[in-house]
Image (cartoon, rainbow, N blue to C red; front, side, top):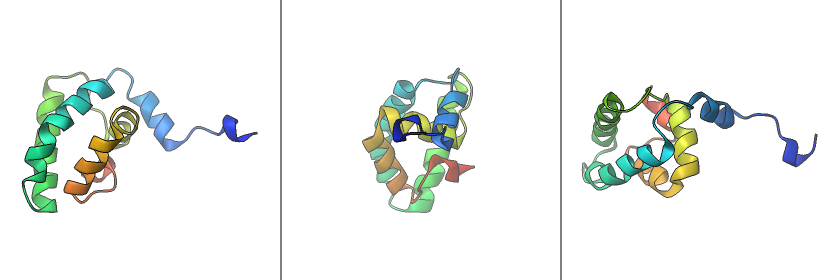
Length: 99
């Protein structure tokens, strides 16, 4: 199997599991809007708490709640810079850390 024929990764499996949930663009628009507020919290624990509440509110009005791995897959593809900034503000390496 060549490099181009890699086995499915956790990220690609999570992306497949995210089908039917809010699209990456929608999640990214929400995270982009929330990023300045979350960064302004000033502590990683507080930022993580605010991010958790923000995502819970987002998924109240959007299809299916994506788990952390699916959210990682969506945001890695659709908005990697926003994803990185949000994870940094909350002191996390992955959205799966919220679970």
